[in-house]
Image (cartoon, rainbow, N blue to C red):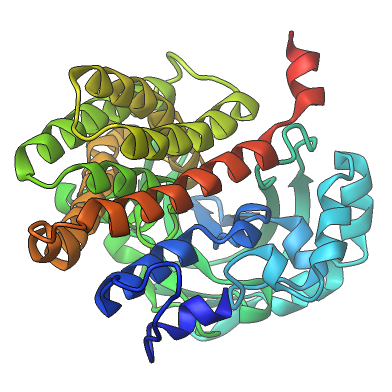
Length: 407
């Protein structure tokens, strides 16, 4: 694989495809990078999500949703996936532990964790302590387990601003703040701050949170979250959209395919987020991988987009929508702006897809669509790479024990 990546810097002729232009080889190397089987067999390293709730009685409850397995094995945001880390085997050992076993393993980490984070109010550090930890059972071990660490602190007075520090050795993270008045049933979130490179958060102006956040600030927060779920974190969805693009040499069939996919995943994203319909991850994740392989294989055996393909894309879109919903539930939705946030996240997903479409269209379709060997020397090898990756992901994500237990 390194020799393929090297083509991006200094293309060299390949014996088995001597007529492929260097630009096409470079684009194929990007697809190969996204389709790296080592990445597929590992867990993506996700940022922690921190929510700081300040109550009118002076309590502060800090909820941190993160991977305890990654914390214990020292895997932080510098790694794209867990397999890249030197402690990958240790991470895998924690992944299969029961909730009780993982909780006991994390007890030895309590003091280090509390000493690592920092809550400051107007430059005054407030001591925090671990109140509780919620750890789900391993369940479907092909999907990373997200645990919740609850910290507690006390304050007096009316501080004007707050800052939060989460060290880079624990990973990248996002943080937001909520003011809660339980008597008046009044609460409002700030916007998320996405933080990397071992930095302290920008000050959260607490007095500004006393007013309801504007609709456009809520919309922006969730549009950004949806976009980031596609670029750069959504390898599944990137490869699926690339599979659609490879078949389309003109704009019309591409628009039909993307419209079917968008309509379908919007439906299940909404239904699943509202708790109306959902499926277990042990079914959804393997089927998403299989959908990628199916579309790629169809690119190889068919010359043009058929009407039956649109129906198949719609069905696959329903599956991908359930995958989007899993991430959105982890991110959280505000009760008083639920529909607006849901719309914003879906819009962000669409903008991410549009970015992929426009980039690929400009680089490949427009430039190479008149090339007579385009299908033979680009569509087929690229689709083959995507298909093999989808099949590999499907095999990696199968959890026969979990499936049999649910029957």
